[in-house]
Image (cartoon, rainbow, N blue to C red; front, top):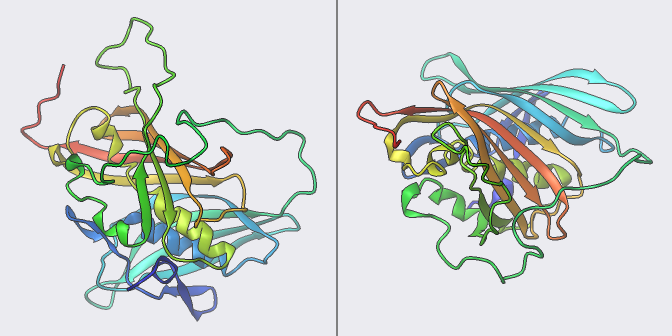
Length: 301
């Protein structure tokens, strides 16, 4: 059985060039193409291979150019953009071989690494709306895959333990002006951890990146009360993953909350946040996604 560390692993192909050890995994029942989080995770791991151990990823931002295929490996070309005493920056281009002799670009991103600073002027972390600590109390016993998702992320269950969390009531106040143009006030909450052991920091951060792509393209429809099958297209366009610590142990339970804040012109903007068991915010993922309705779709008023 393939474990997550193997699924996101890379091997050198040449100078600053790396290939994924495995082809990327398929997302689930509705999609034949590769799960975007797998492409992102491989890019993160490749970038880590080119930086010194004292540097830690804190930001990776980029675009998904085209969906990757699941029948061939990913190829990562890393460009060294900046190397200073405190920062190292890399640009990663992820491609796959085409059916002919061509190379097809799938993904491009800029990753920034930072040293561990000796002091901080301020230290704080916002709290989740879901009740802490992350014990079995307040954790739903229903299956992580809801009927509306139609097994969309079924294949991820091989790598991750995922349990929907019973969320507290939303803190957003109703101001009397809520209408069709108001963003949904609900949020999704889930706790998760990896199933197999991970070794290096690169593996733990890559595993977190693997998970954090899950669901953000889908929740604008879900939180508005629509099934994904009402869409003719649903895909991530761009993303920003920001890490607030490199002290990450993906074998421990973590909590994620996801919300959507604006949608229009067949695009939507969403954010997922992740906390550790102690309630420390460790990462944020924002995405702008494409969400096109089917021709016969009629929105609720």
